Structures are given as C-alpha cells and as structure tokens.
Length: 98
Image: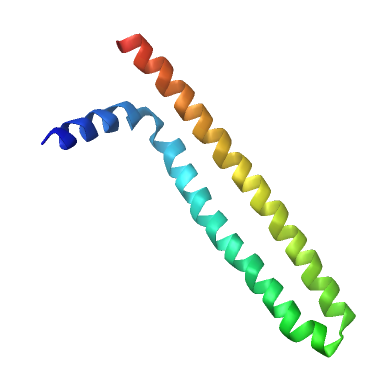
C-alpha cells in the first residue's frame, strides 16, 4: 500500500512534464533501434560486401553507418537534455512545495 501512495505522488509531480517524458521515451526506443541497425549494417558489410569486394556498396554502407551514428548521437543528446530539464524542474517544484 505504501508503494502505491508513493507512486501516485510521483505521478502527480511528473504530470506537468508528460509531453517531455513521452518524447524522452520515444527517443530511447529509437536509439535502441538505431543501435541494432548499426550492428546489422556492420555485420552485413563484413559478411557480404567485403567478400564480394564491391567498393560502391561499401562506400554506400559507410555513408549510411555514418548517418546512423550521427542520428544516435543527436537523439542521445536530446534525450539527455530532456532528462536534465525534467529533473531540474522537478527539484524546483519539490523545493517550492516543501
């Protein structure tokens, strides 16, 4: 019973940050998929492209992997920024209420 009361208090505190929390969760899910895509591209390039010695395909996959890494870095930065903003705002709200 105590856990439900604590959880309901936390949800009340987080209610004003609902949109930011949803964006943070979406970014986390996309980051997970981007990490999987990067691993898949690397394994595909090692297994298929390097064996067949096609430089154009290797160049294309390299560009795609570079883009995936940039996407990963930018989404991770956005996620971290939103988490810091939410935590800072929650600290201010808690200090004002108590």
